[in-house]
Image (cartoon, rainbow, N blue to C red; front, top):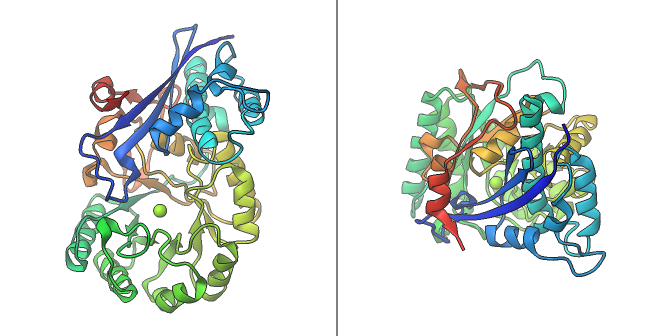
Length: 391
Ligand SMILES: [Mg+2]
């Protein structure tokens, strides 16, 4: 069936309790709706400031190297996903090629897959490849609140306990009490982060995988190593973003010294940035965010690159059910994805995560079951779009 894109709408959504002092990008959403002449709508989302995302899509073009994204979409067959992506990448190059324009393109591309799946009457994963033989395992992504070491630790341990009781086989602890993105302006000494990781491991016991995220707390390998040198005893699956992402040689230096892999990549756009992260940064786990990297197809390219180097992929996803669905569909055809990030609605305070979308993903015995509905299988709650929509 041939189709034409008739409209592209960008929704800027911000929770009414947004707090810029918190380190949580799930307080907003950039939701893209692509409509067609066949009456099929596609939904996509990306993790970037939604006003910036909207400008990336809606700004009119001014010359051949900077055409408007929306102009490049109207009238095209949404099922020509690769061709459309390549055209947008090429003809927005002077405005984009990396960064926000690619993040916004990721939301658009996700919506095109949703349309393609709905048109074919198949879940998106069936269009992407062969279903993996191994289960898709989500990890509970836990971000505590608290202004002191004790309240932060207790909140983290309480949600780790709750995640364990929900049957999660893996948990990620955000341990960010210092550094540029410290929670609620906290400024605890580095040694306290060791106490925090020890406390969470204690709660989880030995059988649950523990992932640790310190959100760019250090600037160099030496300072990082002084704190994390003994974290091997906590049997952590990886240490996420210990060092600022531009300092690739420092990543490599730290990776050489510690007995666990360094993970990074949540902010990167396109496979090209991942080449540098892997080759020069020597990271042991890559974390593309499906929207931010440029969409499902670009995330697949990163997964292929990681697979030939035998590096596991653990996609980043700190967003609503729209992004989570796209991530899960990718995981069902990608055996190299060891875990997917999952923000359990029961354990999170973010209103958009809880209210914006319902996904076709059942969680049973610590696994995600393969979605069966056509497309990404998302239901959008339009009351939430109206309630949190911004001009
Ligand atoms: Mg992170």
